Structures are given as structure tokens and as C-alpha cells.
Image (cartoon, rainbow, N blue to C red; front, side, top):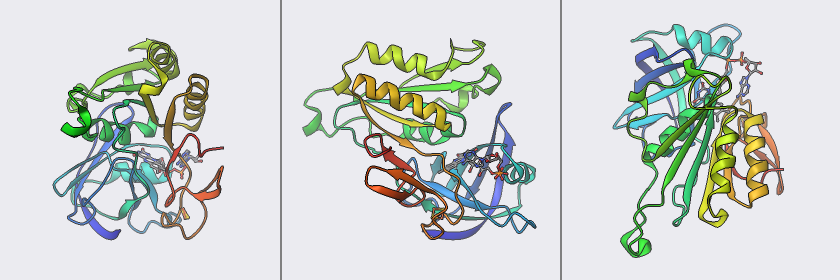
Length: 265
Ligand SMILES: Cc1cc2nc3c(=O)[nH]c(=O)nc-3n(C[C@H](O)[C@H](O)[C@H](O)COP(=O)(O)OP(=O)(O)OC[C@H]3O[C@@H](n4cnc5c(N)ncnc54)[C@H](O)[C@@H]3O)c2cc1C
Ligand code: FES
């Protein structure tokens, strides 16, 4: 884990909902896995001492990309930063998503601030098992389901060209993809596949993930969720991010944010 001052290379709007922040760091970009995050401080603004957690969206060499939405004061301030401005970033933090699924098909269910880590996973997931394990099977397979409020939130095509699988969208108002919540797409998929051959990985608003976990339970499909818990220190010291699990309370920043469905209460 490293705490560094980084200089912004790019910080621009990509659509109505998301901004993309780019900076470079040799240390913060090392051995990063999808689901891990950075705790970022927007310089020393009065009354905004706490850092804010953001998932890694993409890492290429030393370059790190973050995709974010404006939610409150911190993210609004972040959106005002320009090339050359400095930020403090602590990372890589947290437990990542499971990479190897031993032949299971990966079903990624994303919404809102949960879209960036799942695109990262969809771009980098070890798609082919080793020749010995794969025994001639071609691919584990991957489907990325993204839920948006409307078409204006849909990411530009260029942001999704490296995804190694099928991408399906739903919008609440029906302006793009399937009309309704992303669970409509998930339900259809679960009805047509064998539960033992699937593994769900989800990140997004807690209400969305609750609905995903309910469906997973109904169909008997295993999976894991990256919990969207408010954080402060990011390193397990303040206990501000504890979540209740079947094994007691756990810190979301160190023991999560990714937890198996079976673990979560
Ligand atoms: C592990 C993790 C990874 C994240 N990755 C990303 C990412 O890649 N991109 C991105 O845009 N955002 C991400 N977030 C959410 C991001 O941290 C918050 O949007 C940010 O902290 C809000 O700060 P703010 O000062 O703008 O809002 P605040 O002023 O702190 O809050 C504004 C409003 O948003 C609510 N809020 C704040 N944080 C959260 C949260 N975590 N969940 C739900 N509601 C919240 C508050 O209750 C309040 O109503 C992530 C959060 C976690 C825990
Ligand atoms: S944010 Fe402090 S313990 Fe997790």
C-alpha cells in the first residue's frame, strides 16, 4: 500500500453521468486487481478532510484511470480539477473480485458507481483457463449487464471495446436496451442457464445488489458483491465501514469491499 501525491493528466466528462480522471504512479499501479480501490483526498479543502474511495477503472503501465459520478461536495470539487493539479491517493486497497472461476460463466451485474470496477474486471478477467484445466473448453464466458436510469448514462462505445464478452443494457425509462431494472436481464439469463455453471459478481447501489442477491438465492447461483459502504480511513483503523457478515462484523475497506453472497447477512 502506498500514499502518494499524484498529478492529474486528464479529468474530463465522458457523458451526462461520468467523469474520467487519469494520473500516473509507479507504485499505485502495481499488482492492482479489479475490485480494489484508492482513497483519494482533494488537496486540503477546509471541512473536507476525509478521503473518498474510488475503484480502479483501468490500469495500463503506470497510468491509472478512475471513472466517477458527482454525488456530493467531494466529487463536485474533484470534477473542477484540471491537468497539473495535485491529489493525494492511497492504494491499492481492499480485497478484489475473484479472478479464476474454474470454468464457470461470469455474470457481471453493474449500476452507477459499480460500473467502473466491473468493466475493469470484464477487460482483464482470466478468460481462458490453463490448457491442462480447460481440457479443450474454449472459454469460461462472460456477460456484463449494466443498468442505467436512461440513455444519457450509457457509456460511449469506445469505453467498452476491450470488454471480453457480451454487454447488455437496461434503462429504467426504456430509452436504451431493455426497459426496467438490470435484474430483468439477470432473471432472463438465470432462467436459461444451469445454476452450477454460473458465478455472479455485482457492484452498484445497495438496493440493486440486494435484488441481485435475492435472485441468486432463488436460482441457487453463487456470487459476490462489492459493498458500497461509506468509508473514512480506508485501512481498517476507524471501524467506520463495518458490515455485518455471518462471521461477525467485518471492515469493508480491508476485509471487503468484495464479500461472497454466502457471507453477507
Ligand atoms: C469501495 C468503493 C469504491 C467506490 N468507487 C467509486 C467509483 O469508482 N466511482 C464513483 O463515482 N464512486 C465510487 N464510490 C463512491 C464514492 O466514494 C462516493 O461517491 C464519494 O465518496 C462521495 O463523496 P462526496 O464528497 O462527493 O459526497 P458526500 O458529500 O460525502 O455525500 C453526498 C451524498 O452521497 C451519499 N454517499 C456518499 N458516499 C456514498 C457511498 N459510498 N455510497 C452511497 N452513498 C454515498 C451521502 O450519504 C450523501 O447523501 C466508491 C465507494 C466505495 C465504498
Ligand atoms: S474506513 Fe476506516 S476501518 Fe474501514
